[in-house]
Image 1: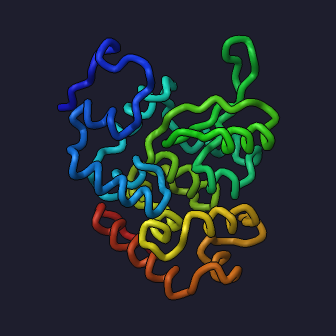
Image 2: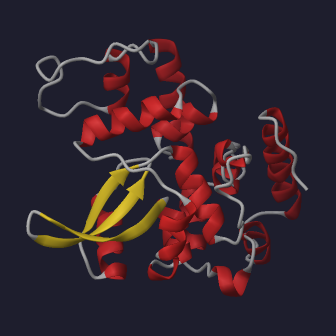
Length: 236
């Protein structure tokens, strides 16, 4: 049971995510330091690092991020992602780990509702606004829901099926970066040119672009398979 503090105990200025999780007693000092070290090395979001290692559950992460950024929560499903899939380029959604789920009026202005599992920086916000023509309004979803949405965009039709456990398995890019096989900078640069309809699977595209070897891709896929089977699933 986590100790969720009152507004008085966590007043502005806004706290860093790690400090907030420590205050909530969701993570200890040693685990946080390990996660921060890996974050510095891989440049993956801190929450993604902790969830991928099982150091933090994704619901607590989503609640902490929503609290930290003063953002609303959102639940994703196949319909909400599929309905707006064509509006945002797949490479941009994948690179930013962000899903467009329609527009709405907030405080008297039209905004683009964007589901995320980590905070959006200024550059990411600018890219999304340029692509959608509206300022982004981030909403916090679970990490597994974002992963399922991205898999759906890349053609996995059953990504949101209730009996699928693959949503909890890290995406291929995260495994490559987390395993030290590919840097965040190189991955992001390659993904700016990636078009799912032309290039097919991300792994094949990275190999074709000489970004990474086929052996490295196969190693990452084997790790995905191992994690998926550990979660009780069966990959074809």
